Amino acid sequence: MNDSKDKIRKPSPMPRAVLAGLIAGITAGYVSSLFAGILGFVIGFVAGAIVGSRTVLLMNRASEQTQ
Image (cartoon, rainbow, N blue to C red):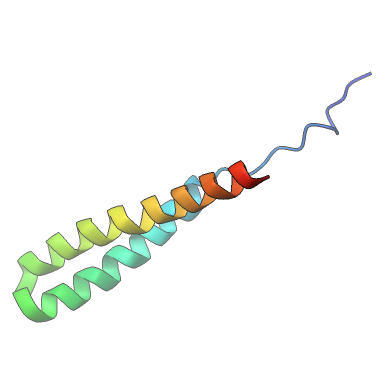
């Protein structure tokens, strides 16, 4: 018989990481644009997106290691 029920598939953290990156990027970009204009928005967006998505991925990896 198949043991397919024994192998529970965990959802990928990528969609959540992308969403967190977008939210963090927009927030950081907005705050940066208040101080540095459009260039600040672009730089803040990129930096916020990287930090936000990496945070979610690293938290997922840490929770997998503890289990």
